[in-house]
Image (cartoon, rainbow, N blue to C red; front, side, top):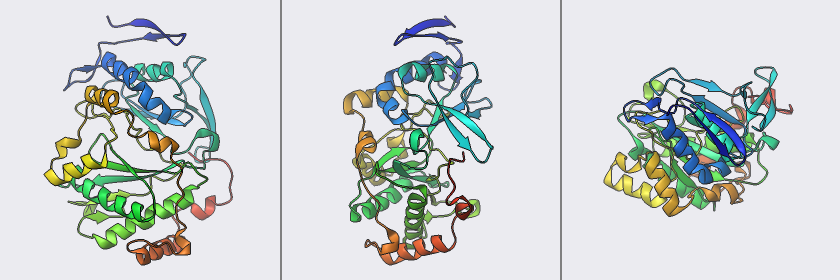
Length: 339
């Protein structure tokens, strides 16, 4: 059977090319992709709901040419919710899909939208991030094991600030650390804080950590990508598939699992494919649920935050203020979003 028609929560969906293989090395078909997203829906939908969603579609499978899609397709069903957001860069309004329900998620899976990249903010207040993220990206021969070490250093700093943090795999080769906020915040504040901490880690661990993207210096080091904390950028959703050789997933993990992978120096301990992720969720629940609900406020670095290396943090904060990221001053005071 290559085509099918299903009813989901009162919505009729036509599913096509179900036997098409999207992950050739694993024999993982479009039907398998749809089945995964349907099973993981109770976990992923709360993390997508209300957020402008960028999709990375692979109509010819992971070995084919993908494309990013921000605007909702013209042929979408009339029940698919969208959020209009002004894009200063494109000088037009982009109508982002809101994946608020199972029917929309299955519809996206049928479009071979393997990777789902939501905003860090809710669409209703696109300039106010509800979470902060550190994307730890290893340069070979470094791998996720070295990312675990950097992640644990980050956790220690957060704990000194009284902040809880939550790790997940990128589903590719790195690790991502999230700090729930769910309180009034701006990207200028979260990016400043993230940049300062990345610089602090580089200062304290120059042999392993980079705070700026430099392909020449990447070998064997972990790039702490603080720049993801930006209204123009998105990060792979927790529970999203990735377009790798196998159907790996961006998977929430415990800090104990991070510690174990570091201790055993075994990167394979943090590789999770679709079926295993569903089983983990059914057994452990959503390890990322606190990211949706936990209310935390970042310390004001300009008021002299006290933490390990606080002097360095303050220096980094001041440097970032004196030399803001390109475009920050230009954007200050302007309304609307620029995606």
